[in-house]
Amino acid sequence: MAALMQAGKPPRGEDYIDEIAGLKTQFDVFRFMKRLTEAYRCRAFMVLNLPPVTSFDLQSNSVINNWPTELLAIYDQEGLMTNSPVLRRLRNSTLPFIHETTPNGSRDDGKSQIISTLFERFRLIRCVWLPTHDASGLRGAISLAGDRDSFTAEEIKDLSYVALHVFDRLAEIRNLDIRVIDALTEREIDCLNWTAAGKTSAEIAEILTLSEHTVNHYLNRATKKLDTVNRTQAVAKALRVGLIK
Image (cartoon, rainbow, N blue to C red; front, side, top):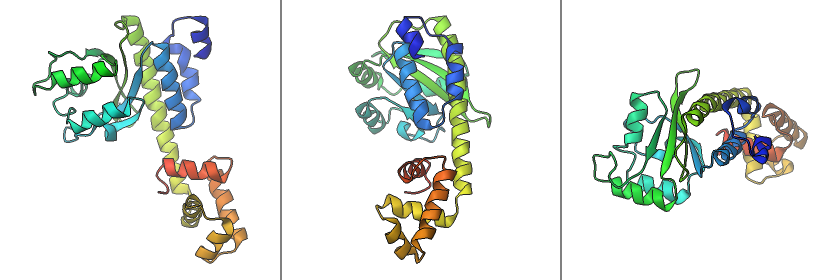
């Protein structure tokens, strides 16, 4: 992707597929999406699990995004997900579409002006939404937003192709993380928890009434199972996948 951007060539969907397949963590996908957003002259992206109709919080349904924190906070505080024409369309169709925020938008709750003012403030007035799904049937969508000119049909076609691969790769990473969680023993998780709390191996050994050698063995085994290179990375990944808190 970087070579294409430096060469000034327009991006194409197929140019990204090998790179997406090689992404190993959710953070890798986040960095990829940031570069993709820049390549298509946009300002922000969101990967979204399609929320149930009973959900009112956009942030909890977002898998990854780089929307401005303040925008997301105001969006949820104002309850703008309720009656969202974007979500209504995502639930009723699997076709990609462009959505533009205007003061006279298609909301039926009188909040079009709030939406328009908010998104204009952050220069996210035009957004392409790309419905997608994973192998389990979980529906979602990926969006790119900004204040660029309108997306072409060719761009939308390429981005739809990329979106399918990105959403599927995120699902694969999530499934790998679940298998890792199942593979770790209770003692290995205990040692990671205490390491995250800032305890040394000697201190953990005293807390768990184990030898320091045994604690190091558990931590080394957990590090390998988490596919990390040291304890610091192991703790960071364990936190990310919800293995420890």
